[in-house]
Length: 233
Length: 215
Image (cartoon, rainbow over all chains, first blue to last red; front, side, top):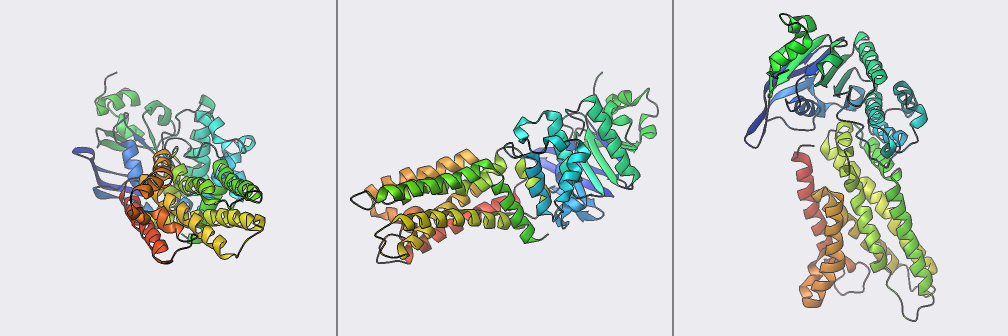
């Protein structure tokens, strides 16, 4: 269970997150939707302990990310691409990440296989395409066999086959009892896989609920999204 | 989280990055070449000026590499306890610097036919490690590879010799102070203490910043 409560973040005089709060529950895929610059990444960065919130809490089963011991075994995450050094191979990248959390090295082969990068494991990350980098980021997130997964724009750069693959992966994890939270600015690409939606605009949560709840009264999710976030079609 | 795992993972990072390995091998090779040339030289050659740039670079790489791209974010997600990450990284940097310094000094000692004793070489090893640690502390403070490298190289290779020609107070600069580790002097302890103080102050400010800033 991921619980974000009353999170406020200011940068200089600007409030970029204004009392943001929502939950992502086990066994469900929660999509965190909003236009670019709405505060999705800022929220996830605070959730993952990268940035400090000015007030409020972001917790995994009641504990802040920074207090988790071997956090990769509890939470797998990916923010914008692979997060790997360009001149390292994918395999070597996964090796140091695994080592830091005491994860057995055999997991490297397993996750490379799971994301379809087995034959590219010894290639330097500089030679990776956007989609391959995305797959490597997901491989690192899966290393510790975590019960929660937090992914920022996971479908970015993936081809249609990749998008289909990641939907299946997320569905499988949630069906096995995991908590899945993913952000996206492309509502149509997550509509099929999400159980719950959280919509953010201008640093504030504008609505939360199941896909049916959120789209009630609108023609479809896209119409609901633009109406709620104040965008124009 | 265990510190041992963090140190091992930081060592993995250094070992699997081509530039770190090349810097270590290059520095030891330069030491060997100078050592071999020394055997034919009329007067003894001081190898330190030739290899210290390698130690400056080696000190900067562990932190600098984190910021060339987005690796630092991965590091913080894997090890969110920043104090632990800083300690693990520093330990790995010390290991890499020590291995290189010991190898460079050992090569020199082996090639020195007129070695008077091992003392000077132990001092040289210590000096090179201090220079590397100084660069490491600067990199931790500056958090970018190129500015840290330019800063450290300017300090040790330009500012320090320049000031030494102008004022005797230049002996308080970290590299001049540390040089007393291998150069004959009357006050053998002051220099190393001054150098250690420099590293401690820069390191303390850097770690404070490392702790507080957003990743």
